[in-house]
Length: 352
Image 1 (tube, one colour):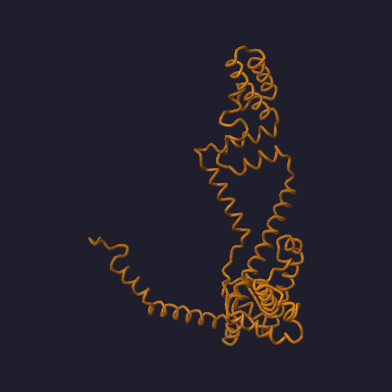
Image 2: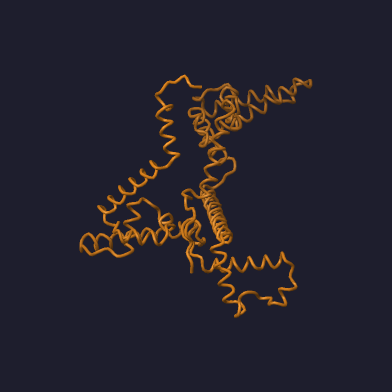
């Protein structure tokens, strides 16, 4: 098995979270543009339901119903003649009917009053309005949302894994290693199922495709890909994680209790797993980020005994000083410092 020497692992935010974030940004943009006309699609639109019926917020249901009946008789389209008068009466009648539908129901009236008092709560109005219109159970919405996120998680992780495999297939180092393994196993019939006579019947494009499939299979079977590009597992999706949440919490509590008893009370020495955990904790890295570090570097951390806080603090200072020294010797950084000194903030010049 050969381990990759390095691959980017900076996916701190999953694609699912990015999609959700963009959806919220787009929805928020729509909610805050148009000079406040976003709320025009709710209830009575730009009109005030109370004003349409000629009542106030303190009016009772009986007063609202009485006012609606009077206005309905006044603006009923059948009681008007002429095309324009009939059309105007019909529009007024629809507005009055809509206002009455909003105010006759106590729940709808409370939601409408909340919108009048909190016009900036766009998302709350959207949820309240369509929840009542569609009669959707909140539990169903949660189930569907989790399912969609789980599907996106699994698909995007497979895409990342496929990207990593294709990346290593394109590198001569790993491609040649895979070809060497294929040639070594060719005598056992592993190199190709068609044989020499079968391969001779294939076109060049088909032979190349079969050849790439063999290389990919060898890399998949022997490549130790860690971190964000690791091969996805079904247990990593959100649904399974939520299902295993009680077990995960119980396991963590057992682990924490064992840690306190074994290392704080009994003062036993740390094992390799505990040493790596402390190093990762001091570095403030997630498990995925720490797993993407090369094995030789991790072994160097262990040799330096970085699980000891004083050793880690000293190592961190050395790393920062080394980084500063490299930056100081960097010609680009020198030019940048020279520019900031001569033309940076706080300096007025006549050079244009």
